[in-house]
Length: 531
Image 1 (cartoon, rainbow, N blue to C red):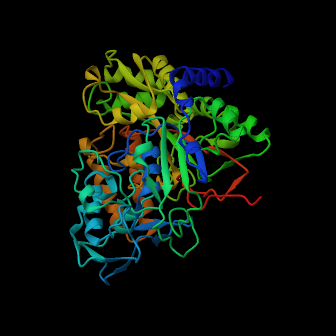
Image 2 (image 1 turned 120 degrees about the vertical axis):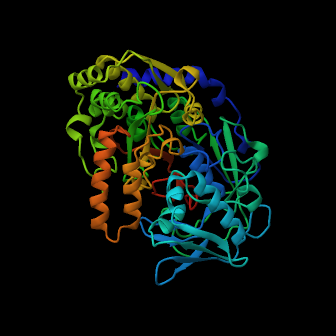
Image 3 (image 1 turned 60 degrees about the vertical axis):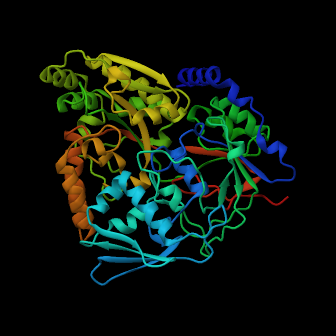
């Protein structure tokens, strides 16, 4: 673990040394109380509708708001709007709360919400499923709108309160009218922070200022629900791809918060004075790999199964995490510990079974077609998986080509549906938060509608039908039965290869307090400790 850790740090330092030498914008702002955070990578992709990247999502939570929130008990709560439901469950009426303004001073209207939801629903997997049951989304007046359904469904509230990866952020109508296939070019929200475009350096630094017009809710803050109280003037995200440099900066008071501490460096943080290491998302995450179903060799189900059999979760987790206190193996696509977690297939997807993989490849007639494996180098939580994947696939008999790049390039590459020989890809790995992975809609990997699905584009109509059955189910027991069927299909069809679960520590200066404990990284309610 230590050898690989040094390798990753040195590689990131060589690739991105210039980024850490950029002066921090906050030094030029006199008397502004500024929180400086080192995020997992540099922000380049800005449209939270077009990207499922966590960093883009986090950017969205800074400047936008959502109609509904979710608290730490998984209960949906009002945020921008309250709601009522008709007795037959087919009509939802939403009413915007008072005091909502866009960053340009204009009032937020129901029409803004309607257009925003329609754009979101064209791309998001939950939104797409919801729209199959929607007869209309229409403004009633400036402060209220209705969602009319053909049948009752749980997807209205779960979709509009979605935590990740594509939250239903509300934008001004003029921006939300951008076609869902095109990125937005203006970044105006109604959220607690304003994006400072003049100081934005893509991939290097992002600056946010307090939105003085934002009116927090009165309820206590809990996850994305309740009062979003901003206690600082500015938040700066600075990019430091070499994590040892970031930790030194934290110890020296040059930065205040590190979103993700590599596990091999955690002892240094825990031993340092004035720094606290803490897991902010106590539920944690699951890591997995995704295969491209459109092109050989993974257009063959047997080849997908061979890849899943070849990789051992313990091998991945030992290299990625090292400390077993922070990880566990798990074959459940919807998460061990979640109500819908089922471990069908665990006997061959948790432990490496090279003989099984070789037998499946032989049965499939695999001809040595190269597998293009995307390998991000700048995020510690994503750098280990491709190394283990590549090694296991080669042992099974695959021809593997590693394609090295930074994570934001991987994010932009994910949507490339060209053949691997024409700049596309065959396989990549990432991770998702367990808080949103426990049902077949929050779990992005379980959309299986072909080219309209998330990257990988599996086409499994049986899963799509079961997902709609899940949305119509009347009880948790019925939903559980459906989830078990989805788990079986997801494993047998090679929709996603689970690699295990883990929790990621953050670190911050003890001069600060109030960092929200939540599955997503949030910066409201943070403040300097009293001297």
